[in-house]
Image 1 (cartoon, rainbow, N blue to C red):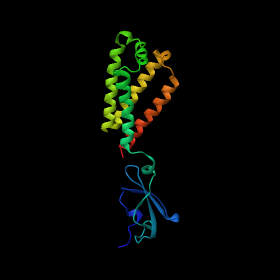
Image 2 (image 1 turned 120 degrees about the horizontal axis):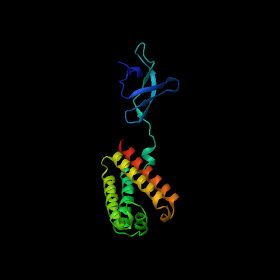
Image 3 (image 1 turned 135 degrees about the vertical axis):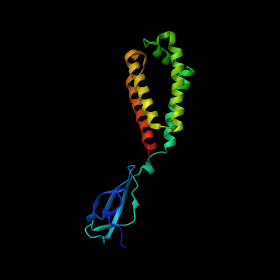
Image 4 (image 1 turned 120 degrees about the vertical axis):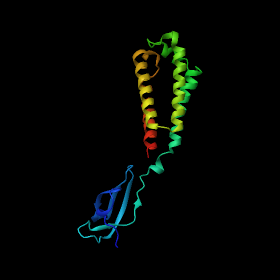
Amino acid sequence: MGTPCLDAWPQTPQVRNAIAGYGLAIAYEPQHSVTVMQITEPCECPGQNRWAAAPQVPLSTGRDRVMPPLILIRIAIAAVWIYEGLWCKILGRLPGQQVTAATVPFIGPKFAHLFLIGLGVLECALGIWTLSGWQLWWAALVQTVLLASMNTCGLIWARRSIHDPAGMLVKNFAFVILMWVAAGLHSF
């Protein structure tokens, strides 16, 4: 029996495109990885694709050489949350945050300190959640909603106490992108 024909291959991985003139076939696998095969000889199957594939040679996407390990990305995200929650809010090392929280109408000066401690605990929990690697897609969603809510409230009610509103938005945008990168890499 000769080399299996491209058309006779099972549906997974599906061969989407056979470029016989260039000697390549591209197969897309279920989790978005790509395999490139060299087409070497005519197929012996009548009525099928006239080219057969050599053994599969995975094409490196470069991700293994460019991206840091997922654990480092998770540590970076967790470190930001734990720093913001523990150092800045629970331990109160950034007094400007209490001023910012006090300007929000439904919090006010009376509950600002208590609110910051609760928020700090929540932020530390998000850091631990991210570090654990459990359900990173949901973790990224919760973190995105929390950051969007805090930024919106801050810009609406406490804009004057935020020393650099544009910088805050740019940094948080980059942070949210990093969260979703971690969630996306976790799915592979």
